[in-house]
Image (cartoon, rainbow, N blue to C red):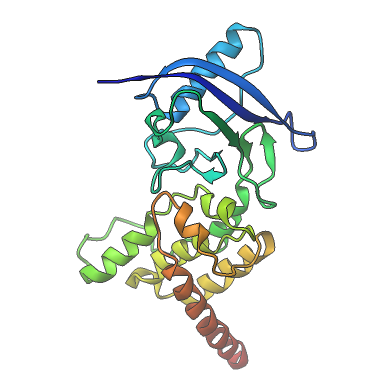
Amino acid sequence: MSNHLENITLRIWRQAGPQEKGRFEEYRIDSITDEASFLEMLDILNDNLVHEGKEAVVFDHDCREGICGTCSLMIDGQAHGPQRGTTSCQLHMRKFKSGDTITIEPWRAGAFPIIKDLMVDRSAFDRIIESGGFITAETGGAPDANLIPIAKPIADAAMDSAECIGCGACVAACPNGAANLFTAAKVAHLNRLPQGQAERFSRVETMVETMDEYFGSCTNHGECEAACPKEISIDVIALMHKDYRKAKFANRKDLARQ
């Protein structure tokens, strides 16, 4: 049986544009079922604002199933809110109680400039993927699924890394604004598979160095792992650093032969 929360106060960051000065504004939700998701609560708030002739709060959302990584909110100072292993869209109001004041902010990172209100520009992630987050494959018909045998432990480890949805919570939670967990997950996903071996060293080198152009340096705080809604382990960062060191030696030898 559902219950209702009463008198919820929302402190929401409002910012008209990237160059505008932002501020917190307070709003009241008089009553809401605890079965509502956090984004549904924001939908209700926006409906109320529109009916009052006010501007709705801008926030990112898409699938609302914890898959796309679009939702990106700091809720009471925690990326995606108080429930671990959960995206903002899958967080429900049952995690709060009547009379609560909830502070909602966008990701706070230099590489993620604010577009408006709670929406940020995460295209720096796209630059990392464009630099090497792919494999080269021959065109033509799709090969048989079992053409390249992959041991189950390797497939499982690759899938664990592939769970990364690119939401940016790791960057927002990191005191240095580092993107090592995101980059390492994308690198490990491909570098663990036989299909990714041909470009393994060039991939890790270009992706790490592209990452360094936009983001801060990792100092092993571990906040990224704690904030990740898919609970990806920071072990992938160690694997990325290991491959990067190997890449610098391997690629240097290749240059020497030319």
